[in-house]
Length: 374
Figure (cartoon, rainbow, N blue to C red):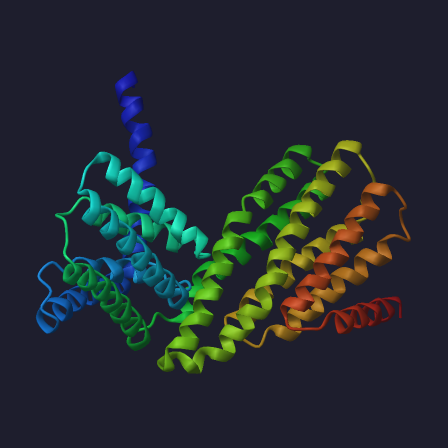
């Protein structure tokens, strides 16, 4: 194959997966895209037809900024947007009316708008919107007082329409959370299996690969938490989704422990790398306990999906902790002891992901250890 042919193959190998992911994103977000489009059009109609504003561009712009393609923190976003628009328009109109438009006026209004938003305690959205509004105003013809008021009203119309659209046609909070939870927990379970396999085969390369996979999970944990947060907000502001509140609460309970389990797994993978490099003896019971953790993670996913797998998930986590603790009777090397401590920590976090209180989880682990001895 020629050099050009190889380059084309590499480009195709890169673009095809991206295109497929794009198609999947469009399929997943198709109703959100339709909602966004309709809400932008409605905001424009209200501002132009009902209020008689000729250039009501702030109305659809506000819709896009509030709704966007995500559902996270829309209520707070609308408030911050309104504040940002108010600051940006007020500062820009004042400067433009006094000095006209031009390059130095543009730089001045952006600086003052951002400063004003920060002084008012605005967040990122407020600051950015203040700057955007200031740029728009400073580059348009010099307004009169009535036009300045119209712009502010248009922003309020857009924000209101966006929030109304979200409350009437809300996204499914369960689907939002599950879309991030399911692949995360599936890959997390796979990493734990990889760690166990690496310890069993004493393969340094496999242990290092498992560690790399564990590190790759971190960004997806943040996405999962945002999805759960979005689900809570949807249930709060949308009466049509109140029936999902119990499931959303279950997701909220599990979100932080899942984050901790991911961190635990990363530390566990580092322990496996250390043990294989030092050629330390890792008893089979420890390896089996890590496989139990993987089973518990898979069952936690089924539990969050709505099945009755909670009991089995709990049993697998407790068995992992009990096996790991008992294995210390066979070895006292530092590498194995560190892995055991991490298995126990992971078991604790999995139990809390099921909704158990820390004290109850610790008591259950003690009881499981006693049953294993009997």
